[in-house]
Image 1 (cartoon, rainbow, N blue to C red):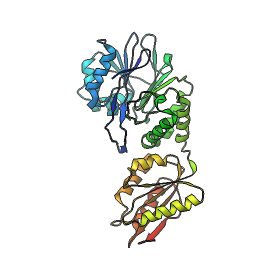
Image 2: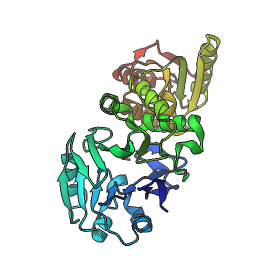
Image 3: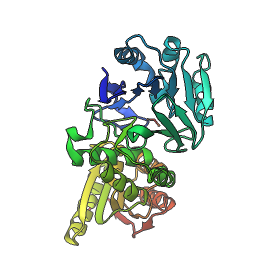
Image 4: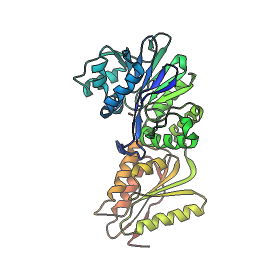
Length: 371
Ligand code: FEO
């Protein structure tokens, strides 16, 4: 289905309500692969969708095009959730010129070696004129891949921001106004924590680059289009990029074998709550590790617990820590805790990983058998 956003600009992407795993990130309400069609003297498509949705995507395009052809395609990002439909689109619209960064050109060639298309490489400051509209290209390397780019439609004060400012929201809502600011911030925070957190430096650079632009509409490549709450989201992005956290918020993440590590988690919860901290406890048997990561975004204290199993921590805790380390939260205070029966390696292993994340560490809490 296509939707008109404003005169001449249409949303032609697809809803993937069933996807539950997005490279390690649990997506309980699915996502969307957004794509946009801009009608001018020349017609421009901004981004493709995932390959599995190519046929539905072609139908959406045709709803708006009504037999007209696409002249230009802006490929803001080569990751297959945004480029997968390229082969089928190019078969139907072979005359369309594809625009993207030099890294995009390399990526597309690697992913779609048999597809036939003409490609124009763009860099910062380059402009594509389509008649009354000018598309200004703003490469944003590592937001989220080296090829990533956003594109500014100057005359409409509209930013096609690709992965930046996205949310994994597969509910079919089109605009931020449909569910209010709180939900938008919650979903944006989940997405930022699980996708964008390692790239804070590059995102700050992007925020600086777009700070001088008039922004009326932000069209990301996932989730709802942002119209009303642009200042609030920009402000949150600055805060998240600077790793600003709630000074009195504690996140306790753990798994347990026979209940003693759970008791330790409860003990830490009581102690820190009594000291006036806002404490949240997440058990990794009951919650996916990416849920824990979402909750870690604004927590100053991150405590991690596991009993020792076969000289190691539990696999669920190990998975969380590998994920956490890759996402590189900074300026945090950590603590390792856990129960053991004889060897007790899990606690020092957790401690070492949290140190390697750059965390300032509290004394570990280690208990033999039971408390
Ligand atoms: Fe939504 Fe980096 O792809």
